[in-house]
Image (cartoon, rainbow, N blue to C red; front, side):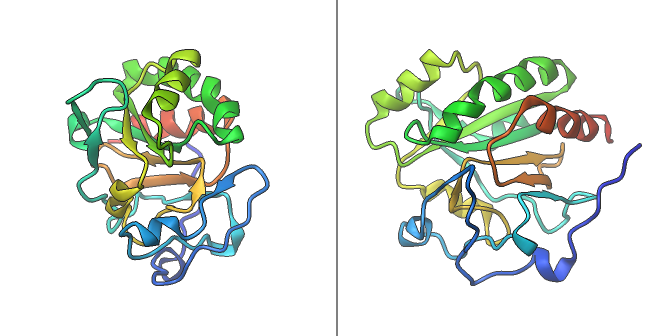
Length: 203
């Protein structure tokens, strides 16, 4: 089995510094996450756009991540809904070109892996008109749920070690919901699926 290099702890734990990652293939959100109640932003070690924790980070279990469902009025969608499952968390906005570009790839991986105990959870950010976010989901035939979070308040659950200022971002969580991988870029199916399947095979 292929082994991925672990991120040095000193780098993985960097906090209290605003993210300065500049990615051509991503839509940055600046310091809005801090202004909306977040405390820290993630700093990518060495400017990497793919970061692997092998084994998954024991200090990287997310906090309570929940919020109103984009599509269903009055329904709360939560990471806790997926106990015991590998979860792929994707931060997206309909205003973000790379998010539109990766939508088909994410849906493909979702369909290919959901029978392996894998769930997907989107977090829709900075779409202040919910109808536009709903249209994105319908037009792109997205089959998994998303939290509606225009103010990015739910991202405080990511803590200081994971991205809040690069959109799109994708986190792969193991069955204990510890972070196994972080992608700070738009994804292709061939980028994501092997990682998701590897994490799903691990006990």
